[in-house]
Amino acid sequence: MLQEYYIHFDKITELKNEWVPFFKRYEMVLKELKSDFDILDLEWQAIYGYSPIENIKARLKQPISLLKKIERKGVPFEQEAINENIRDIAGIRIVTSFLDDVYMMLEHIKKREDLRIVEVKDYIQNPKPSGYRSLHVIVESKLILSDSVIWVPAEIQIRTLSMDFWASLEHKLQYKYKGMDEIPEEDREILKQVAVTSFTNDVKMNQLRKKLLHSS
Image 1 (cartoon, one colour):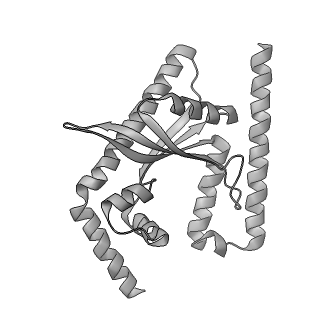
Image 2 (spheres, helix red, strand yellow):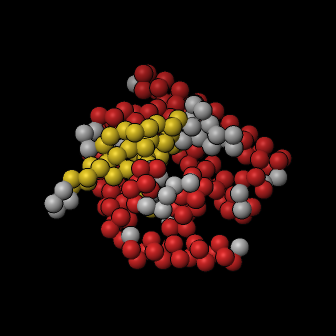
Image 3 (cartoon, rainbow, N blue to C red):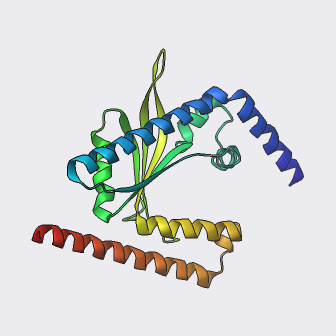
C-alpha cells in the first residue's frame, strides 16, 4: 500500500507540474459550458418567466481520481491517450425541475453548433443496479483560443431534483463505507426502494404538470 501511495504521489506531482496546459483546457471548457448554460437560464427566465434549470454545478476530476480511472481502464499515461479514453475529466451537472425537462435539455444540446454529442447514456430509462438515475451526455465542446480552435471532451449530467438528492446521499453513504459493495445488502435494498419511490414521484409530478398546463 505504501509503495502504491508513492507511485500515485509521483504521478500526481507530475500531473500538477508538467501537465498544466493539458488541464487548463479542461478548466477553460468548464468555464465555457457553465457560462453558456447560465446565459440560457437567464434567457428562458426573461422570455418565458420560467426556466427548467434549478441549478448548475461544474467539477474538474481530481488527479487521484483521474489516476485511478487511468489504471482501472488500462489507459497509457500519455496526454493523447487520456484525452481520447477519459471523457469526463471536465463535467457539469444540470438539475431540472421535471422529468420532461431532462430530455428537453438533451434536445437543446443536440441543436447547438458549439457542441458535438459523442455518446448518450440514459440511466433514467436504464438505471444502474444501485438505483442511480441520470442522463449522461458525453460531448466535445468548441473552445476558441488565441491562435486556434480545439474541441475538448466533457460530460454533461442532467437529472431532476429528486434524482440529484438521492445521488448525493448515496455518494455520502459510499464514502462512509468506502464503496457500494461494503454497504450491507439490506441497506442497499432500501436505497433501491427509495430510488424507485423517487422516480415514481418524478413521473407523477410530470403528469400533474402536463395536466395543469393543458387545463390552463
